[in-house]
Length: 79
Figure (cartoon, rainbow, N blue to C red):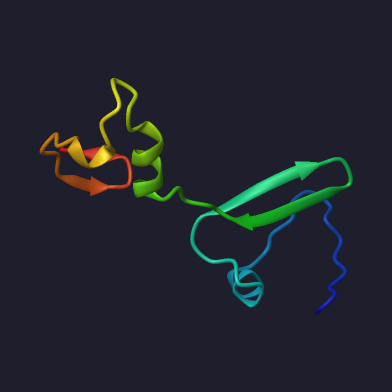
């Protein structure tokens, strides 16, 4: 663990090297509470788990029976 004391007058900037040392890369979550700020990796939902949770919304069929013929270009993009 490395402890660095800094003065944050107007802005607090955490450089990429410091984030990488903490294993924080990619998309991050910032949680602000009184007296503390936490930076955490963004937890992406598992697509198969989400489909399983949605399975049976219209009946009792499993998610595997849904075939909409969508081509996925990104996490939230369907073409």
